[in-house]
Length: 341
Image (cartoon, rainbow, N blue to C red; front, side, top):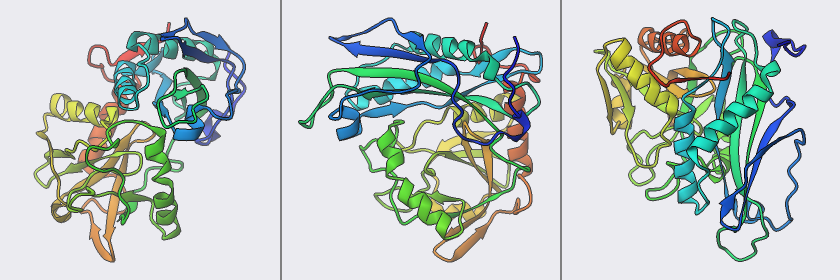
């Protein structure tokens, strides 16, 4: 198969329209069979539920070429499960997990010419999403929905190498107890936009959100989970029912324990104890791990011992091992790589 004529080495992290996308509609209590289409436009009523009451959820994942030339996606079954959880919370019909994985496979396969070659640092980003599509004027769930999957080739998240981030402790709340912080809904990301723009204007790369009830516990950023390394090399991640269950974070914890022999712990992490950590990172689909070098709490600086020049040694071990698994250089646990045949 001939690849598209794209400058893979210089791709940015943005939208590039590909040839096909998957579309399935929910009406009269059932999903249709779903089709691949060349039409990239979504046509909906002006009063559609998604436009009026933000009834929309999504997932983010990647497809890429492994060292031995296979096209794979990483743990799509977990994305399917998470989207099902999101749907239930927003009173949307669940798109069956097996159909979700099948839709991802079909969409990636139809756009295989856009999957970047191995070694370029680029990947094919895959975005499954669902929204209320029929007219809704009263505050209630929609009756009809559309599930779609599109793809876009993207460059490496870190252009010019990985550099530790400087983040700030935010004055804004990301999620409330008993709210929607644990699901991947568009509304959660909309409310974070002002906070991240404000952080950027003040010279920071990201926000550290605290729990909204006590503002003493570390939760996550606008789009990634935290992962900490203690001075005795224990891997710690914050535990909270308002944190999105990151697939990358769960995978890193498995890698830490089963591949690197490190002790792992998911527990409440207080802001006060962050100064005693050896390393800090943000983990998610886009970058796997983004190292954090400095955290600023209203003028008070916490500089991680790992410094501002490079990724900490344990964080780098985690990053190298997980990316090695994803790229086929290290044997993956059973079921982690879905091969697109």
